[in-house]
Amino acid sequence: MGSLSQWARLAFRRGAFGKRFGSTLSGAFAAFVLTAAMTTAGLVWAQAGQNGGRQNDASKANAPGRAADSSELELLHVQGNVSMLAGAGGNIAVQTGNDGIALVDSGSASMSEKVSEALRRLNKGQVTYIINTDDRSDHIGGNELFATTGHPLAIDRAAQASVLIVAFHTILDRMSAPAGQATPVPEKAWPNDPYSAPTKTLYFNGEGIEIDHQPGTTDGNSIVFFRRSDVISTGDIFDITEYPIIDLKAGGSLQAVIDGLNRLKVMAIPGNHQEGGTMIIPGHGRICDEADLALYQEMVTIVRDRLQDMIKKGMTLDQIKAAKPTQDFDPIYGKKDGPWTTDMFLEAAYKSLTSKADAHAAGN
Image (tube, rainbow, N blue to C red; front, side, top):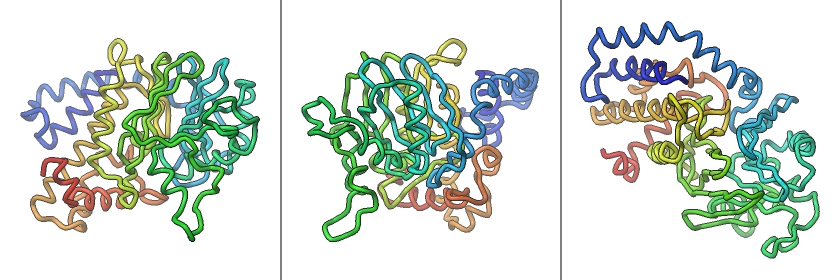
């Protein structure tokens, strides 16, 4: 998004609540900003069409927790050694080079054969690494296929495995199961290279890859930064297609999502006029840059502040839902049906903000 359009949106949304700039924008200034933005709307939408219009079908197929319903995959070069494969469930970041292929997430199981075919057209090398950003089925579904194909890796720690699957250790804990219980995920799909430190690093295809543990939608999210290519793969911490999926049972929280978005803003460096620079592959949806990230971070922060105010006033969850605190954002991020609705988000956010740990972290 262009910087003018970005500030126009924030002026409207923040001015309406008279809070976050320290004082409400004057009517004359707000009108000026919004009028100017309207004159550039054609340019903004034209750019949106260039950056994301080709991915609309893939984005619709990318609803979390649901198998992709499109037979078409779209492979888009991002920059450097990194491309994005869309339409297989969650977005898949693909790094290629002489060493082979590294993936961030592997899509839905139903699309794994098509993902494999698309990768063979891009690079004849073997998939050596899969980095799972979380354990949702549309991010880990292809793990099993790649773990059961290919030759054993010539890497000491691989122990004859044909792919190294990297994830934070709590992801492995949930994908496996306690003794005597049925495992929710086939054993071949489990991470065989888990990490527990704040950061894990790899060097692959002539590029440093930084894997950062960042609690967000769960307690085990990872953010992946391809340093030379200047591309970040965020997983579901940043998902421009909907409100954040807060999995309370898996240790996720609204404040942790905001902390993750704030961290991403520090990592991403914008190009001229807030366009370009560090490119971002979100969990679902089109390729983004720092300006897109800023808009999403502002939205989530504003919604949190509204909910906190309502909670401080003693409003119940039903009263908060009736007040529609997300109404101005719903045309972009809201859903009335499907696996993650606006009501589900509000309920998870409310429970998160009223828990002791999250309330303290958010400054309640």
